[in-house]
Image (tube, rainbow, N blue to C red; front, side, top):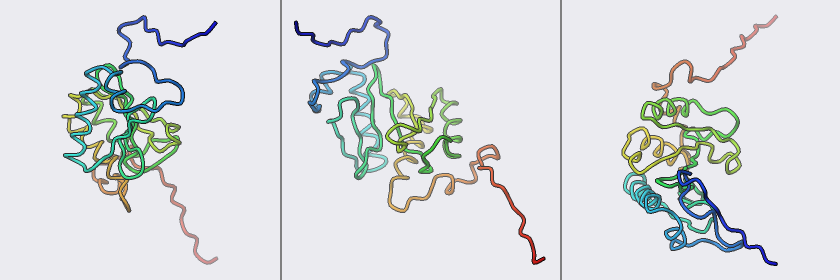
Length: 191
């Protein structure tokens, strides 16, 4: 008897774009992705790349991963797009370039702005060994929102050579709750 695993979806409202993957060991191609994800997810991917190239600069698309479409900036994946029915879940680097358990002051600011636009971010410190801790669920219409555009721009720019953290460039936008806690230890004179 030979068992062939097959994806079964009972809940039609489940937020997935298509089949879960390809045959073990096989890499995906552009044609594979287009054939397996929804038309809306494909349209989101195309709009995401078009906006990025028009607004931020050149990117390279990597179709080979089995679970996501990799949008590369330089040598690394800047924005892996995990397709969903009508968009994608996107994992981005931190705008301050931080890794770790605590999200950066920049993300505190972006999180509030995005929440005002009806979007939620999550801090995932373990995704891609901490290199892409910012996760957000986006649809094509979200790409028109200034809060999303600013987040994408900040996460793209932090990957540039010698990039300055967003919080240092925009300290005027940080509130007291966004500032890191710093202990001030008084200097002792000779004694």
